[in-house]
Image (cartoon, rainbow, N blue to C red; front, side, top):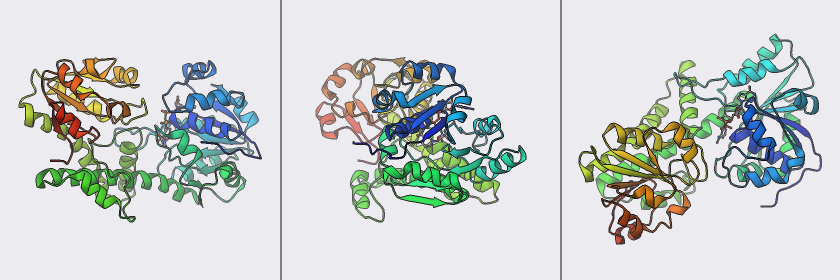
Length: 432
Ligand SMILES: NC(=O)c1ccc[n+]([C@@H]2O[C@H](COP(=O)([O-])OP(=O)(O)OC[C@H]3O[C@@H](n4cnc5c(N)ncnc54)[C@H](O)[C@@H]3O)[C@@H](O)[C@H]2O)c1
């Protein structure tokens, strides 16, 4: 991918250097801008200053290294405020117990801003509709002349840098002032379709997009479940549906439910937002419920073949919520491992990059450095994440290491025929 270059380099700031912030900073630096990055996590900033990349994201380390002269990392806000007028906010907005978005990190950033009228906050964090209006009121109350722009982020972990450099669209919600225009100018070299709108509509584009994608996943998962009852093959069904341009083939892959740091929390935040505004969003309630049940259906598949799981040994291949990331937030593997253990099974696991993260979140799981040793002595293997290395797995070798013969393909990813030729019993999602 050859990156475009800006002919009008700017100095900008990015507050929060996690998955979104670091990719945004590296992406804008790649375009030729100078980026002042701020994070409250001193350890993360130290690592970044040593040239270490705290997360796994393809191409990110190389991009940061290429642009090291234009990237500055600090725990201090002052240098960012001195050099940049646009301050992109990319701090976390995790779910609260009620399912609403927790805005405490966003509010901390707002409170940390000085009284100045030459800066703008550009919100990349995913926030409920109405947050921009509240922040603008708060700025006015605190006597801070900050401008405000909503610029939601749509990148996919695993292809985040690519998505930054070749976005399907850029959404900018603003009050028609200098800041909105400055954000549009910054993105202009990418040549992406621009949706310039008001702040609440920009906020809603983000939530509605994620809710729609999650709905598509839960929909095809339910179709898969009906396929299992009726003898249809969901892979054929999805192919036939996806070729209809009104439907499209993306996000029509059935599996063991969506996870990650965005879909579960954003769907729940939109549902809560609707509820708080007096509207019961019935469809999203079903989307969430279908997703939870989907994660657990794997257990019934195991029981169908093995009976009771007490004393059984199950190997999980892949732990991250999807391939090409080390992100374990809301990963289906967490639910699976906990359910298996609760039902009396022992669990071994392998993931190419997420094991360090997984160790912090999973108890009593036996982690391995390769898929074959994870499969050692297993009654069943579950393919949890669609890592490309599993596509070429030697199923004969897996079979030889196992005690049992069951493979549950939670992503319909393995070559069914190769699995069967190896002497394994193949159980996919929505396929007879
Ligand atoms: N991860 C994704 O795929 C993705 C995609 C689109 C949008 N988003 C949204 O972007 C936002 C960030 O997500 P993420 O996955 O990058 O989160 P993250 O947890 O990876 O990173 C957040 C960073 O913000 C830092 N931080 C917290 N409070 C701070 C403060 N007061 N000042 C400076 N830094 C602070 C944290 O230390 C952390 O490094 C969320 O709202 C998320 O919903 C995420």
